[in-house]
Length: 119
Image 1 (tube, rainbow, N blue to C red):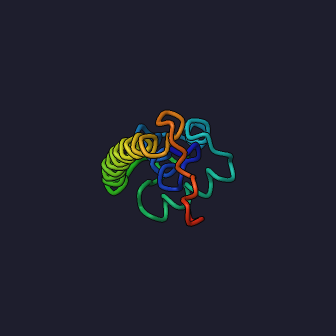
Image 2 (cartoon, helix red, strand yellow):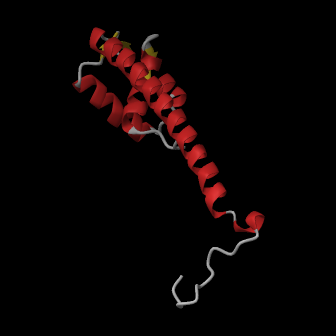
């Protein structure tokens, strides 16, 4: 998995924090965002109707925001499952490559040139 979060993951992080009512400072620190990025992502989730302001300085999750979080969790699970499967397939490929190209154990040199001069 990548060490950097993509846009959807940052939005999901913000929404997850907001699900318990939160002020900007709490969102910024818990989502590990600069103030500039916090403002950008807050504007996006507000415009999308995923979050709404409450009591002037707090933010709460809307029904649409809860649905987004649920769908994002399903998406993340599928991605992790696919990544595990891909790792397994790559490990199998490595085993096969070692079986074919491990010249030292067979005692044969696969790069020998035959009598006609072709490899």
